[in-house]
Amino acid sequence: MLKRAAVVFVLALSACAVGAPEVVASAPLTDVDVPSTGALANVTFSGVNTPVTGVALSGQFVSVVADNGGGTYPWSVEFSASATAPGGQVASSPSPWFGEISIASYPLSDGFTGLPGVDANGEWSLAFGSGAPAPFVAGLRDVQVHLLADGPDITYQYTESTGQGNSWNRPFSIVGVSGLGPVDYHALSFTVSRSGLYDFTSVLASGDDHFTILYMGAFDDTLPITNIHEYGLGNGFSPFGVPEGTSAFAQVLFAGETYIWVTSQWASFRPNGLFTNTIVGPGEVLVAGGGCSPADLAEPFGSLDFSDVAAFLGAFGAMEPAADLAAPIGSFDFSDVAAFLAAFGAGCP
Image 1: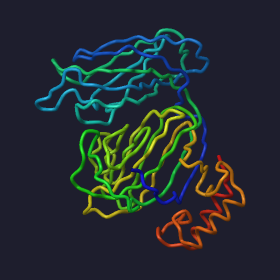
Image 2: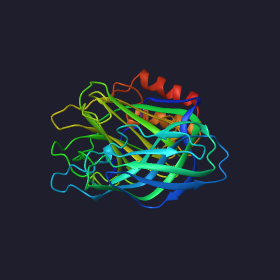
Image 3: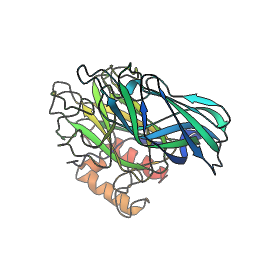
Image 4: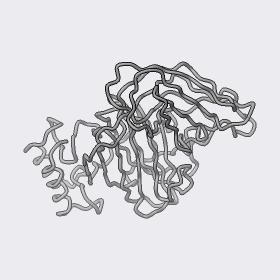
């Protein structure tokens, strides 16, 4: 099960100008099978009052007819989509779009922008490509189409260590468990205040290999495959072309859902190390437990007052993880006090 990890000790919250894609409307799409020749589908929106700049899909990618012998087709990482707005403007998914590189059924929660702020009311045409030759067929199931508009651009950033004393055998994708463990991990459980497209970036300070996995709903380290929603290779072999030591992906998140971002040591023979994780999207990242910031250590959560100061002083005196708010991890000095004062002074978002 998810074990208690040290409290995040460096946090940056910033709201910039308009930019991050926010979900402004949603509609269901009938199940779609996508052969090598592609497939088309239509969906209609009405009552949308915001100029739309992108499209997102949530549901499940499936392999309807798969290369079970070689395990080559259809890969979700080769799947593509384009959306034509009622006025004729077109936006297309990047390549690669999804992150999984197996033929397994894969959670779909991805979006793309590229529209110039269009009127969304009317019929949209969606075109899909499987990336697989005949006779292999990809598919989409239980799909919702989401329209995206420019929302706030909010950054949540924290620095921690993979060395938390949590032991597990991590996944190597959504279908298997690595034989390089047991290894340590850090887990951040959170919700978001707005539905939209969020960018995740994790940088290991040493530049060595690591691995991050996003779970939705719940996380149990004895069942590392269950509830995986997305992952990012940090070994230099990510399909998104990020360098070794960096794990990055984008994902559509929904307000009201619980997400757990796990940052894992790569292998038992690789050292644990400091990492900096950044989430950028249209909503605030609200850390589980009710705390609105690293300084929110006592009830009532969601506000900062003298009870939080007293909780910090107690934890600092006892050298508890809740007061270990600044590097180096495992020591308690003025840098931790300064980090607390900065977070306390910034208040709750």
